[in-house]
Image (cartoon, rainbow, N blue to C red; front, side, top):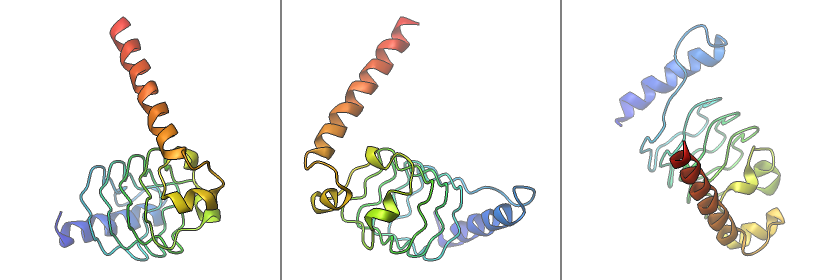
Length: 152
C-alpha cells in the first residue's frame, strides 16, 4: 500500500468517525502490510486492522479505540500512549511492543488471548507459559471448529 493510498483511507476514516458514520468510509485495513508505517496520532477508532502487519509501525498516541486488531502483528510496534480501550487483541502478537503498559492493555478486549514478551507477561500478571498455553488452546479450538464443520 502506498503512502498516498494510506493517507486517503485515513482521511475518509476521519470523516466517518467525525460524522458518526454518515460521511466518509470506515477504514478497512484487514491484512494490510503496514510495516514501519508512520501512524503516530492517527485516528483509527473502530478500524478493521485484523491480520494487519504492523511490525515496527509507529502508533504512538494513535486512537485505536474499538479497533479490530485480531491476529494483527504488532511486534516491535511503538504503542506509547495509544488508546487501546475496547480494541480487540485476540491472537494479536505484541512481543517487543514499545511503550506498552499493563493498564493500557487491560482496557482492551480479549487481552488475555494475545501474545506478549516474556518480561511483559509478568507485568500483566499472566503465567510465564501463557504464550505456549494460548497457542495450544487456540489449536484445540480450531480443531473443534473444523470437526464441527465436517459434521454439517
